Amino acid sequence: SSAYKFIYEHSHINTKQPPFSKDLKLDKLFLKYLYKLDNSFTVNLNYINILNDNLSQTDDGKTYGTGLSYKVNKKTNINFTQYYSNYTNFNVLQSDFDLKYKFKINNINFKLKSITKYINIDEKTPSLFTKFSNDSYITTGAMLHAHYKSYHLGLGGYKGKRVFAVMSDGFKIQHHAFEIDKTYILSFGKTVS
Image (cartoon, rainbow, N blue to C red; front, side, top):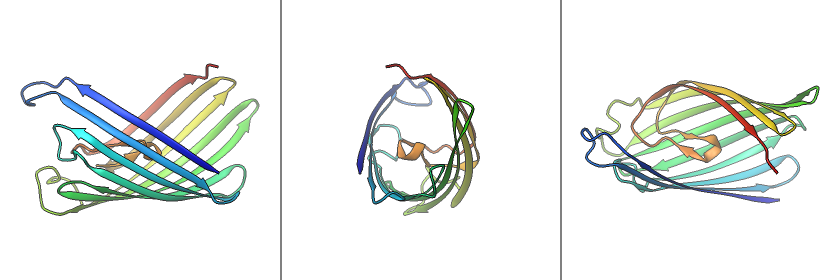
């Protein structure tokens, strides 16, 4: 009834100098714990730590999340997750609500997901890092995943501005001062055994 997920991410990015004084180095840790309460309810706990970001105020930022999933039936699942990100000069509260629906056409399995994110920025002290950001954002997205035998196809996108957002069910975080408006996703994969 328990599941653990763990990701460690390391990036070394060669930057243009100037305007940057050095290359960007990032280390991030993502943890997720899921516990199935019964056949309908599952609890999730998330933890993200930006261990190293040598160019940003979000260095050593920590994000905590907790959520609840409800399995309506075999095809439909609802999830609500609340995230709290703690950075040096500001905090971010994010609420995610998503709805997943599974269906099948001939021999192709489909999973359709809609997601809404509400992001609120709480500044401890005004800084240049958040100077041009809004106090709150709402963004919506839709994803479609198709699975046929060992092949996978994914399509999706997000619309609506966002900044400092937790993405990918708690396994990505946008922690630089970039406001993102539209995102389009296309993925293709094959399961190898």
